[in-house]
Image (cartoon, rainbow, N blue to C red; front, side, top):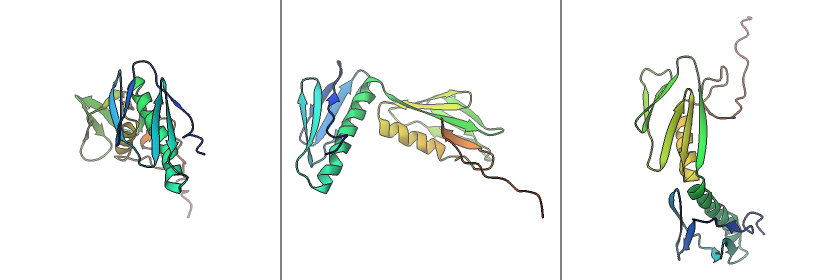
Length: 178
């Protein structure tokens, strides 16, 4: 039995969940989200709790059991609290600025990089910290990964864009001896 899949999802006040044959819709104070219902699981709502049960004991059903519960829980958390990821920019001469909804980054290249935020994601800048927030956990994580991929942190000086709290393994530089 899936340890995650067997846990019920609590539905807070102000959140409505609609389960259709092929899609699950969650709406709350921050917005609306929907996800495709996986075919090997059943979703049932009992008052203020939602439970996910698998239809059989096949390998695919066991895999989708915990996945479907986690996706629904992430949607519920997203429409109530939202998600946020923070990125730190380290490097001499590196600059980050917000122009409208797009992010302008000077990362040591010959030109500034302009990154446009997709719909549903808001970007914020505080000195050398970029915050990515939105209601979809997948979309917030993907945008943060896209920004990080513009200049990944390098192992010698640690210059680049890294997640807040990410540990970069450092390498020793040249010794200078022959």
